[in-house]
Length: 404
Image (tube, rainbow, N blue to C red; front, side, top):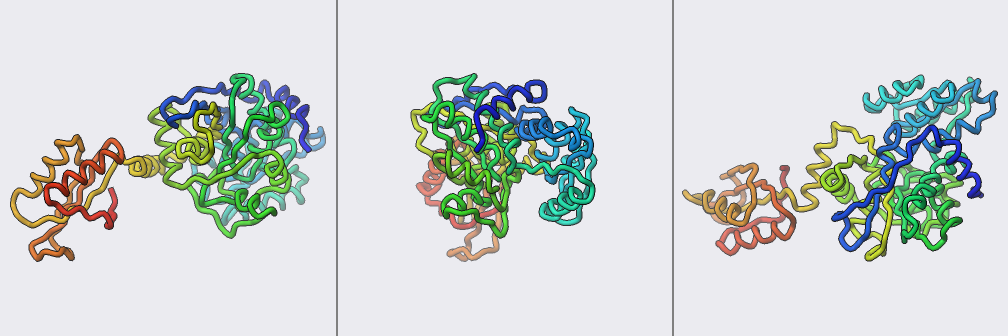
């Protein structure tokens, strides 16, 4: 089992490699909760992964360092291994699926790694990495199921306790389980009363299902915007640590993740990737009994693909009631659009688009549909507008959805 001494040793080794990310208070994000953030999205390479990779490199033998290392990843682990290896003059080869975003490929190269693009998906890249390990003598650096990697991630707990000595719980994103294993092992040996909660995306609940079933399970597929924790199967070591030390686990939906990303941007001016935002989503949507408690959510990374950021923001706005679509059935006669606009404007809604559609299956032969997109404050505001429209004799059709 991982010892606390090993985590403290990792902290010593990583002193000149990683950035100490100070906890910051996050007011107005989770009402009734004294929420603090551990911003590993501000870490070198943009995620916590550098900690585990850095400590793993330091513990290689001289012979292993001469031969080099190999890893497979489509994101944060690749960059962590690349930078950690470069800092110690170690050759690194990173196997990436050829479908990986160009930005991540170029970022990995910029940290000094040799990139090997593999046709297919992550599993194909993983198999190629093992092939290179066997044929070239490289040391394989596992993204989560490795004692040195886990110890490196555990240094986050030491930094949290340095900043805050009176916390009640820590909420941690979970993919393969390396991050929460390191944090939970350290927390339970230093201050067992502090709760450690794990969060997964509902589209990739491999650890949740494994813990619930009492044995490691492999998911047939995963699908989530939190690609950093989209892991089909947890590790043997991490499963054991989570089962031993983690107090509870929960899942968050895609909409909840998007809301958390948007909230962090607006409230904290902080950009988090989907995997990094799940811990904040858990606090926002009451996944654990933390009301009235002082808690820390670990924002594990900030390497979000900017090409999908606008879509995530839009989804977050809709989830929080900030952007609303209404479908209104009208009698096709002059003045109807003016009346609808007046009602919405009087209540402070801001119409952003309108589509008038005569053809349709309305009850009245002279009926038509008016599709309205508007900016609103929240769901209470949305309901107030709906009720005002209905009070004026207009029919609001809630069951038909359409894009913003």
